[in-house]
Image (spheres, rainbow, N blue to C red):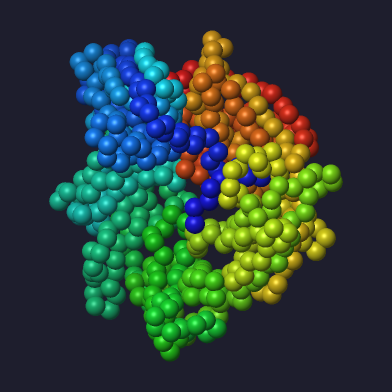
Length: 545
């Protein structure tokens, strides 16, 4: 379910501008031009593909041939021998600029794989003199062999950083691989053999386990590979072979008609391990999962409940060191929440039915399904069929979010206690919640400037809460500076935050890997209820466009 806009803290993304309405007459178009150079020395770069992609966008009427077209179709240009590019006929709006050239990466961009900056273009405005820089890409290369030192062809090798995959390669007949196009940084390198079959004596069939450099099946024991611009880093290692086992058992307490497609899944304890083994539950309630690697797993049941398909934990931890037989699984009973909104003190509410309530599972490994309830006009809501687990509340708006922009979720009261920050556990039965909303949200406003004190437009600004509130995703914010370098983080709960700039928007600023990689960049800000605080964020020289 796609939500119109997140309020009470603006979960994750709040900086993307809405699409502009297209007037009935002819729109004034613009020209965008600039140059791309090599970061070291400023040497012009030719054959760089520069692309403008509309952020938001709308369906418009093409004036040339009166056909319906979309202004989200990217516009591209290729730099000439002097690194110059030009794009004409660009409609007004907000755009993302990306750069691509084989063997190069954008200079100091957090996306690693490409440059990305935002650009706001007014009707008829010509944007000239843009300057982008790129660095020679780094490479990770090596050789994958088995435990006897023989090459392993067809292995898929990947390089990841902060939970994102930045490159893959397949080993050749000599077991060699090469992953190029990498920005400077530290990478986790792992090798996987997909559907290679088993080998070894009939009494002990073995497979290659997913193996991390320098040769371990545990991601926590892996050594990251450091990559420098234009350099090749070596990462050769041995794949580890292992036996696989079967897990057999039965499930009770869920609907099991064949058409429901109920299944059992085993979620690895190591979050970077291979995809979770899974199998269908037979009509008689039994199941068998084969090819399971040794390790510790959590057992989940995917089943059709009264309000749709859901993931139900069983509370069982399965240790696989040999075949597991006779495993008895019973999903933990689902819960129901009955709740109501009320306003704090003398604050006057907007229309309650403009809001949705999302019950946000703290452990999101098992399911990405959103659990959402609609709020009635009187502020009441009911959410049923909620799997057991630990949760936080997130409130979203299904209408114009500006009306709620400065509101916060002040309290979530359960049994007389505020659990807004700590979250709460559900394990069956009906739970009553009272959500106290307040219009007295705090604000952090300010400017982003470069080393010379000049404003920097179109730069993402991130706000993350202190460590004690990291599981509360509704109080993270990501906005973007305007053309004067100004930003405003509105509707914040009181407390401590880290505020910092990014080179590129992130997919999920609440992801623990993202937080650990960026929190040291932040400026600490302490907010009191309803306080408006002004700060100045200064870009480091290496982060400037």
